[in-house]
Amino acid sequence: MSSLVVKNLSVAYSEKNVLKNVSFTQLEGEVIVILGASGDGKSTLLKALAGLLVRTEGEIIFEGERVLDPSEQLVPGHPRIKLVNQDFNLDDFHTVEENIKLRLLAYNQSYQEQRVKELLRLTGLGTFRNQRAKDLSGGQRQRLAIARALADEPDFILLDEPFNQLDFQTKNRIERHIKNYLKKYNIGAIMVTHNGVEALEWADRILLLEKGKITRNDVPEVFFNFPRSLKEARFFGEVNKVVYREEKIYFRPSFFSPTKDTVHSFKMDIQFVSKTHLGWYSAYRFKVGTTLVQFYSVKDISSLKTVYIRKIVFND
Image (cartoon, rainbow, N blue to C red; front, side, top):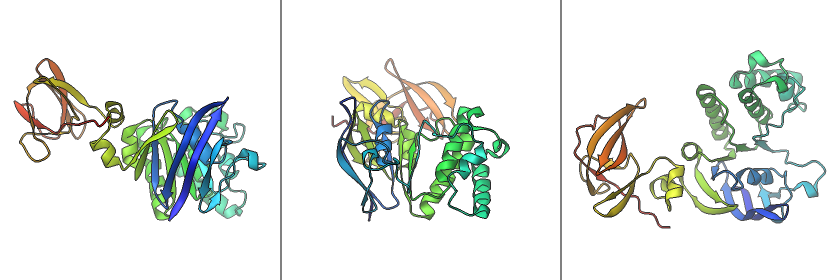
């Protein structure tokens, strides 16, 4: 069953198209990540999906009903779709607790208190509950924006780079909560990011947005293993580039094996240079001729003189 259908969506600012004929369907409970560089229209797409922007063309259907844009209703937005955007949209002169409670006015006092307590614990904002939003740091404001969005348990969540100002531990805690919430209630979500690693971590499916157009729609594994261009490949991590025996070779630092197999079949002579510990694995730098390349491994590979590579072959 489809929860969201986007048909031929276009949005323009000052007569310039920012989104151009965007179409996709999201299945019930699916998490889609919109991936693209700055200025490609990611945030505009989310705001349009939330019913906050006037569309020049197309329509958005959520659970069988049209999402109205601001030209079609008095108060912009959709009551069952919550957007966490980079502007935060907080009530600056209200306290942290008041900001959350403003989303809970339809509930009784007991539920409000319970929900506020739960969200303050989740976001680590308990000690700031009586502090006004305008006095919070950027990371604290981002956490409050997430708490507000989750307050009344929305049916659909739109996330606009929601974790970019959070420390590692807070990010992990909030991510786990949101993922568990989505899975428990089979709720769909759309996240936008320019970080391909984050996209791989979150997505059931990735849509690549370039200059306002969706240029690819696929699962994370395919994006990582079979990129269509070097630009696309680099969204998802480092790519080695080397000219070896007059052939230009591209491969990821993990695309190698000490022995030949059906996947790793291109033999390459290497010379060890250095090693850097990166937690549970290490980065090994080798020379291929005069070019430095990098390999990631959990085992010590510094003694290797040859490796077998799985090449990336670009279609574009």
